[in-house]
Image 1 (cartoon, rainbow, N blue to C red):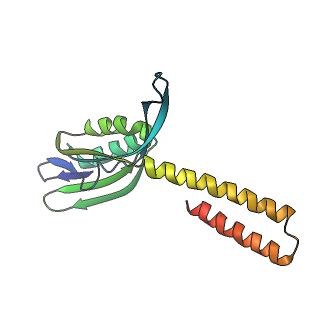
Image 2: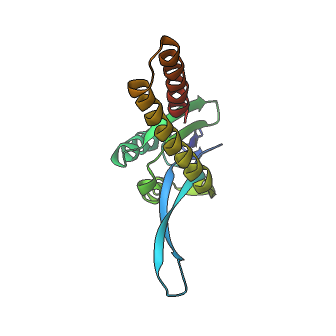
Image 3: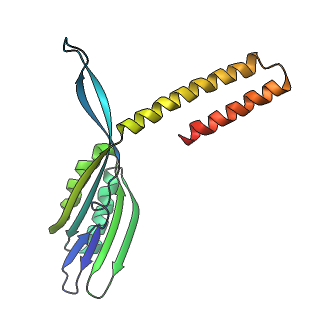
Length: 180
């Protein structure tokens, strides 16, 4: 959110990259999908990242900035970036906010209530379900392999070379799991 205020107490809040900053979060959206011809259905979860860009004018930049901080706290969000620019003719406050998915719409509505005038509002979504479930499946497989190597280490490794080879494989798999 960027706030602008002239010497005549006219103020605007802009956001160069965020809806009253950028709200990026993962939202679980359910939808039904037909399983078979008998009408049975299963619920699948979508993983959506939603962002909003908002540029708005406010009465008083300092007061609105303080109100925005309160709104952020009320919705268990946090400010990840804030940049105040005070020039001769205007004050701009650019704020980036990270919001939990369940509060995205509520916080956006609360932030727009701070506005005297909304100059710009853009909401976008990105479906990352495929990547999320792919990584989740790979992680599950790696954990299963880790368990097998640990079992080999406990029961089948008889020589020092066998123990070192199993421990090395376990180390590599644990690093891969942690990086995912």
